[in-house]
Image (tube, rainbow, N blue to C red; front, side, top):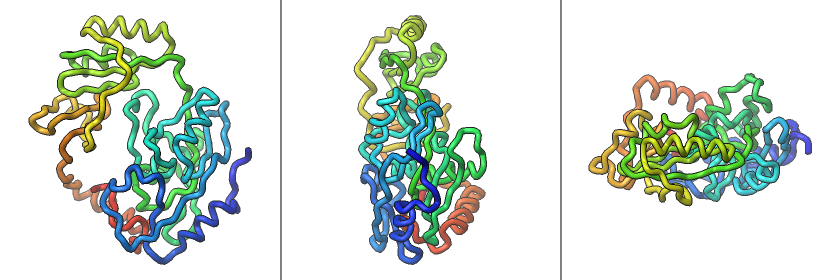
Amino acid sequence: MSALTSTDEALHAFAADVGDADPIAVEGGGTRWQTGGVLHASARLVSAPVGIVDYRPEEMVITVRAGTPVAELHAVLSGAGQRSALPDRGGTVGGAVAVGENRLDLLGRGSVRDAVLQVRYVSAEGDVVTGGGPVVKNVSGFNVPKLMAGSLGTLGLIAEVVLRTNPTPPASRWLRAADVDPVAARNAVLRPSSVLWNGSSTWMLLEGHEQDLEYEATALSSIGEFAEVEGPPDLPPYRWSLPPADAAALHRETVGDFVATIGVGTVHADTAPPKRELDPGIAVVAERMKMLFDPKGRLNPGRSPQT
């Protein structure tokens, strides 16, 4: 397979569909459709191009169009013993990048934002724009992919991305213990892939070679009675973002039932998070960025990453 060029028909057909006039949004898998606010009824819906364009397992990079289901991406990667940072929730690659929500095993796989090496998107003017580069060491326009990740399609409509992949560990194991300090549990092993805590129980995901998992499980036994379980707990519906140090200090009286990702700061809770007051300086930068990328406000109107 060969990489696309700027004359690729699929990307330019997508750009022509987007146009340069009316309010517009991309319809993907719909798994996070309400994230960031309610899309204005005036917005016209379009579909992003689909397909795996180029995969180089030896370099651990893959080029994939935005409308491709994440499940299809992961099926291809799995065949080569690799995986990506994108979450498995039935959505599309472009939607996963635009939302920027990380997996529970962020500590092991890395973040969505860091996984995007290059992005090709359609601007508010209907042009195909490229930011970043298809190799890890290429830093040309590198901050553009980071801007697009988590922007909810308000700065550009993602058409194609180049993703960094990583090897699938040969073994993995979820462990659970009650009445264990989650921070102490995280510090007891070299590199846990996930540490979850609900105020009373701690879940740990260990990944690597089987002998390493045995060693880490033994280390954990010194601080609590960990037992192997099938997987992580069910997650409450609302998602909070906190400073990582605050996640281990939550109380059910404050947020209801919750599952906190220790070392990350993401909290899944029974109650909706309070409306965030954006720092005035950050608000000014965000507004200037929006005016630079989409001065007419036609991209995903009604949505905002700050909501």
